[in-house]
Image (cartoon, rainbow over all chains, first blue to last red; front, side):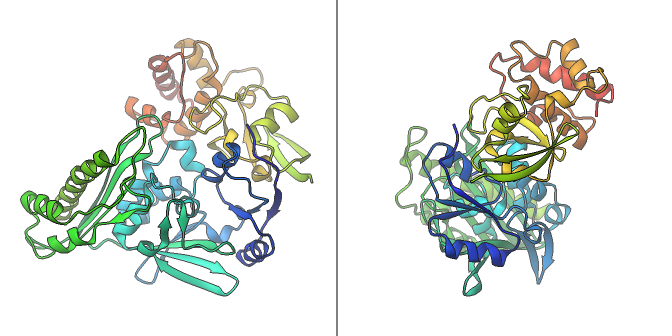
Length: 287
Length: 156
């Protein structure tokens, strides 16, 4: 199995990548290749050209940026999982990255490629929504940024335009008073999430200052359950309060259904994994 | 249109012109006749095609040869030095860590990367570390023992 023919271009800079994308219609950006090459081998995608950004070193790495942490688009899942900065300040992301695929996949797969591909079963989108991450993009008209909650637009579709390159992901540091959790019910062979739940809970003594809950695997685009978080803010975030907030406020429209799990089952999984993720995030905030 | 690549494989630098769609595993097997790297599932799940690129375990069926330009690749053929098997190869032999042998090159190269990162892994850490390698003979028990034995002997 190998991909259909394509023209290959290696970009030395983001500007060159943008220019190449602008010039070549039906081109795709190649980073780690772990989302793109499998679908090209299956001939589900046959782009006319590949723009390889894998040698643009400025897109790799993790650094402090303003009040948060900037992760270059080419940073691999393995680097994110091992990052001491992220383990200390945003462990939700490093923990989730440590559970993507397997070691070989994590050595090649990149955060930028992962979210640009926008697979509904991918682990990172829910985590980025729960964190309130922002996505950086470069295009012919310059740089722009969108909230992760606005980035995913449909199944495998995003805000990213055809001549734009995703350059970085900005995540806020998790407050000292907060805890976070990512839990998933995964397909036993592929490891992809049938339902993944990411939660961040910030505590003010015995009461919940804010809570954020998001899901992947359940709907075509990751689902941010804003109403559940709003209902918990100001509460004691007891197990009963969490159960009641989910029961009254979790509304998932058009869940995905396939041979592995029906839509109805996925919604039930979301209730259970959402509850457990909130409980674990709360307990981690208190400890 | 061919693309010029320069790839070091097992200590020897190769300069070749490759079709951009050539996968690294086919470059190794067909252009360089290094057939120790196997093609298994073709979908980056089974790990039979695992090689080391700049020391990191990678599935060579999901990587273009042009992406490996400028890197150093190690295949199973490159592990033994001066006729001496690598400690992991010896451990797989002694612990009967292989049956049909198809998954073995990938298992061993993934284990090399694992032991470089973590020279004293627990059995559970070895299982997690080899999550991306499937043994169709289901010989996992002895594979874990082999990696443990190599770790005890300082295989990294």
